[in-house]
Image (cartoon, rainbow, N blue to C red; front, side):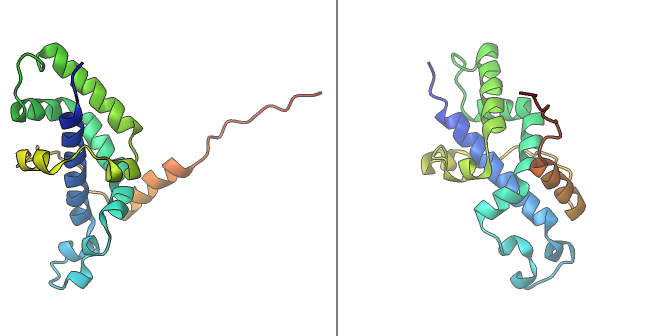
Length: 157
């Protein structure tokens, strides 16, 4: 059995990097080229808040780009004995399961991203994510919060 801590650390690192990118894309101060940090919303919120704001968007993008993420990881951590075709398939499956089950708090408090791994990850793959706007963010968040609309049948006793 292989230890997948580096793979999970890589996913957390990419997730956080993409969250920062999205927070800058969403920032009105950046779009309006304001100088003062007070006018940039991406400076106002902490990492956990940013993860809550952009988790659905980043998660969706990473799930759709899992093959590219695995390829980039295998280049950074070459091991032909482990990461052959079958090994890459395991990474894809394991990565998808991890992201599907993830939530912002889990990403924030995970201990997979270590200082040693961070030094090794000097560049990230480019994930082209459609920039989020307020209307799209509100739609995504409302879909997450809506209870299921299934009706429960009353049983006569």
